[in-house]
Image 1 (cartoon, rainbow, N blue to C red):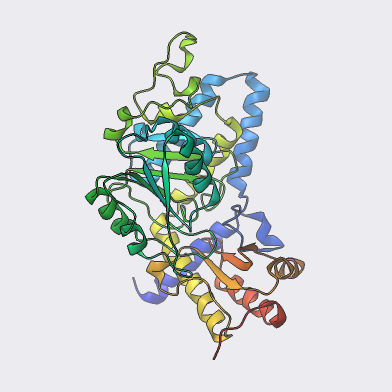
Image 2 (image 1 turned 60 degrees about the vertical axis):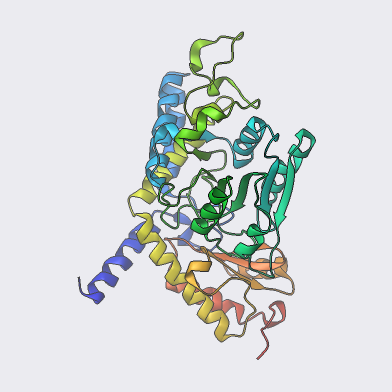
Length: 392
């Protein structure tokens, strides 16, 4: 296809996708790393749940069936088998269930990093009372070099648990290199993909991942209350979580209070009754993304991030995010002298961004356009006192 035709088709696809998100009728939404924008299909899915409740009263067979559809859809998204996927309430819930199944005897060490979302550090630190030894790979400014992990991962390490993309600067870890390092030293690798899942292809087999966690509310464009954990099939039987519940059992509806029989699949990491409304909305969101394709989304988001970085650099704004596409995710961070005030000022102009670590965070998705990028850059020109400028 000629380049002009390809670009026209891509622009048409973005425009059609964008029309499914009513917020763009009035706002420029650049805060997907806090919460994905609400689409009409997701809103319709919530209404479908309400109608099922109205009509049937308590159709748990329908609701549980819908959760299994969600399991299948997420497994397809990451090239996994449905039996390798647990559907949980949050990443915290998934990690706590996993942490409860570790013994911390022969290999007591958990290696995480300075760039991980706080819940990850909190959960592993809470395991210290059970014998865990927690080590943090140290950042070098706004980068997290592989050597920081190389210095810590050893024969006493059970798990390397770290993020794919840092929530506070957009730095992207080299997952393949981390997998090679962990496996070479006899450890497993757990990746938290929350800060990018939905904006790039994810193949857990090709990346040789052991465990992956993520949630629906950000770039997967679903609602809060649903998260996922993938575990490689041959690992599942090793773990017997003490943080359990009836939905983690072999037969959910056996109602056997006297026996604990874990599901043979990753479902053993599930606990209580599923968050049914959020299951409906997340299923609609995943199908919306699948209709576009993560490879198409990645190309679009990378181009937009590159455009924003070029514009910021041209204005001599101090960037925290790497400029190389391979080293960054879908969010770009700009230093600010007063980030909350800057976010508030932009919001008054109908431009919705967020702030982390004292900086402006601009996060991009397939529904964003070059016009969005240009408008936020133009708006920043009005607030030089709220921005940190790089030296000449």
